[in-house]
Image (cartoon, rainbow, N blue to C red; front, side, top):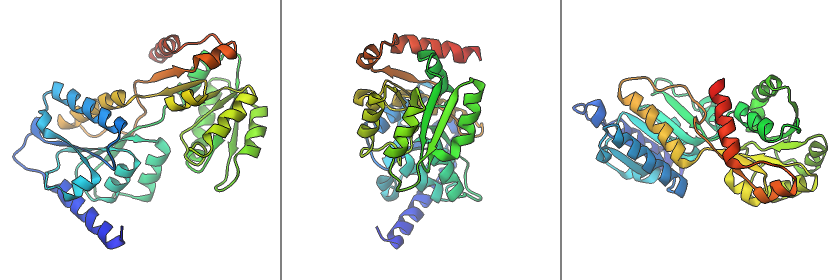
Amino acid sequence: MSRSRRTLGLALLCAWLLCVPHWLHAAQVPVLIVSAERNAAFTEAAEVFTAELERGGVSRSNVQYLTLAEARASATHAGQLVLALGVGAATELARSETRVPVLCAFVPSQSFEQIVRSLPRKGASPMSAIFLNQAFGRQLDLIQLALPQRTRIGVLLGGHSSAHVALLEEERRRRSLGLTQTLIAENESIFAKLQVLLEASQVLLALPDPQIYNSGSLQNILLSALRAGVPLVSFSPAYVKAGALMAIYSTPAQVGQQAAQLTRAVLQGKELPAPQYPLDFRIDVNMSLARSMNLDIDAPTLTERLKRLEQSK
């Protein structure tokens, strides 16, 4: 797409978002869901989000789900809040000058922070997020509950995840865990440093950094970890199917429910809250791998124990 066409598209999107009918009151104002594409996760989250708002008194007809392309071409009026699903939608809404609050979901914390830093929205509406990734403390608590004898944790860091070195270090100190963080420079090979990291680690914690974990590298990382006897704890259920020991993540339904709770508060006149991690979560365990490693763990027990731990804090 040419720069002029993109600029025109953004201008149309801004104009569309700013057209708010003044006669509508909060419970009746349309809420817009926007994504760069329609995939299964976005569609499920949007449906749960809409159903939750409907249970709270917002008419289903006042909640619309549009792709960015549909939004640019549509004459539909924007409402009091836009839910942006995915990095693409979050980035484009950040570039706009809409005065409508923007809540982002399915965006890693590193990506959201990068968007906010690179696209300051002077005078525009507030922008917040429900992060795609889990809080570091939750991930480390899971490792301690599931693998209490494994106290040396290794982490591969790329350009996105390296910004959170200090936060990860703070959380591991609170739990008296050992942590080895290995930085991979852009265009640097992962695997020489991965071998050194695995020798020093008892668990490999995966963070959602596309420079490190992508379709071209995942299988080799998993194979290397398995050969070293180092289980990988991940952020994606797909990784468990591929050979990771565990994953902790939030389902599209859980994200949709949380987004609806925040949206209801905004429709009732409250400010958009600060960016936050998911409230609810799910744990998957690769049971065949757990048995082969003589580990007595299962997803329901871990989920119950982790939730009890969080409630006690």
